[in-house]
Amino acid sequence: MSEKIIIFDTTLRDGEQSPGASLNVYEKLEIARQLAKLNVDVIEAGFPVSSPAQFEAVKRIADESEVIIAGLARAKEIDIKTAFDALRNAKKPRIHTFSSTSDYHILGKFGDSKYGATLEEKRKTVLKMSYDAVAYARTFCSDVEFSAEDAGRTDIGYLADIIETAIEAGATTVNIPDTVGYTFPSEYSGKIAELKRRVKNIDKAIISVHCHNDLGLAVANSISALQIGARQVECTINGIGERAGNASLEEIVMALKVRKDLCDFYTDINHTEIISTSRMVSGFTGVVVQPNKAIVGENAFAHESGIHQDGMLKNRETYEIMTPESVGVNKTKIVLGRHSGRHGLKARLIELGYHLNEDELQKAYDAFLEIADKKKEVFDEDLRTLMGDEIYRDDEKYELQYMHVNAGTGTIPTATVQIKSGEKVVQESSPGDGPVDAVFNAIERALGIKPTVESYNVRSVTSGRQALGEAIVRIREDENSYNGRGTSTDIIEASAKAYLQAINHYLVTTEKKLEVFETESV
Image 1 (cartoon, rainbow, N blue to C red):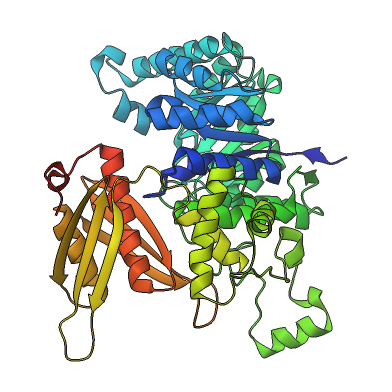
Image 2: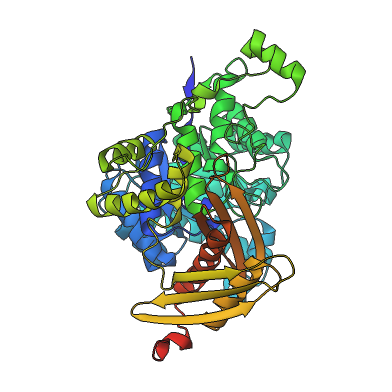
């Protein structure tokens, strides 16, 4: 008989830790609603103690969600209490606490002598901290998960001790993370099997796995662990996350569905919502899905080779092991235009997974009309991009009010911009090595700031000459990265919006003020 695999989605916590992929409260709430529509079992909504915005996002999601909502907490009372405060109104709250368990992490994080003079003494300290954290979490709710950070590189004897201790303290789920993506599938599944043999109370908790993709093995490791006895898998939409990312939810779910002959498991995932969820997460985070990405990439169901096309025309199963429709790829694309009304737009946005109140709908409709005036047809991809662009960017301090660019053969490109903040407007002009560079220079002069541009990408959202252009800019300032995303039928304008949005994210995150706006406006 098939066994159920619990899908623990950590897109809003670990996934958001992708460089520059910060989400505001409204974006997190929309993604959480879509994850519920996808029918995941657990949503890890964030790390409440880390910031007021994180706390608010977890609280808002917990207040309205029917599924299990988890909040992350270090093995500290303040973290655990704050996590529960955010989860207080959840119908199904879960506190997820963790301790570092590998020698690498223990020596790196607990080097101070107060934790013990020797490695063995430090290990005992971590063991006690883990027990106390789980026991304390259990005073708030009955569903507590414990993670042994860097379990993949943890000595098996010590790992068994700490997992047994966590279960004794009341952990109902124990997570065995390959935090740095170090292990091979045979090695990782072997560690799970050894824990099942050594930990005497292992049958009192669900074994969970959380794999990172540093060697490209996150999905393979996760599935190997399921085959040996794990029953919860932690993953993210599009595989986003720290460094090379996490195990990809869509890949795990579809692998289990397609290969039931090898894995007699099932999930409750609504497979037809996979594409909509993928597009929403990509739109809000600004992390573009690579074209050849399994399941959700643009080329996942594309066939260019003549031999492949011939085989497909005769029998789809020749080269496709799943249908596009099974993951929500709809061949019939809904097209809206300038004559479409608010009701039509609202209905289509709901189908795509976006739920707006009246004020948000009006803002979306105004942005939709602006696009519709520039191009004849507005496709689903345009709408997803629109929703991921500026609909929920209420936290931005500085807005592009005006832009003019002069460029051409034999001339020096120059740009003039007006930046607005509240009632104040600053205008500046600058030359540059091309129109985009000129716009960036003008923005920098206007704001009195010059961050390092780490990456700059432009792509078309839809096909044709009137395609909506999407620009993604990543900047680095103070050792941290910040993403910006802008869209327009004019790629220079899209680039300007993206650069300004990245700067906004930096300024909002660091709560820095710009001197130019502390004086009278120009």
